[in-house]
Length: 72
Image (cartoon, rainbow, N blue to C red; front, top):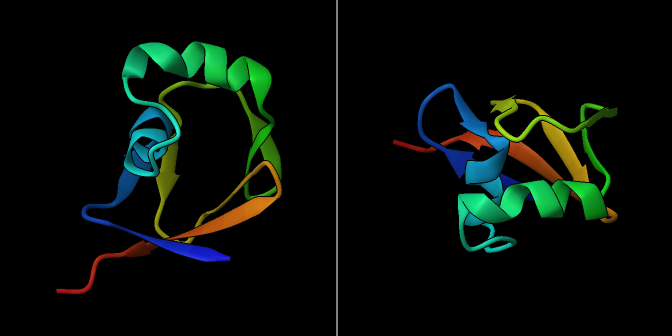
């Protein structure tokens, strides 16, 4: 499991994918979602701007990411 630090209360799915270098621009998100199964806390999601909050677990292609707050 990989921990991802975010600032603020949440990160949107498209921002998360850009942060992790899975897409290079927001325009790629629709195609990416069609080709991959993305789960947040065990529920499949298809929303481009789904809010992923601190404490959530995102699963993508067998990799699990836990969202944590950035250390100050």
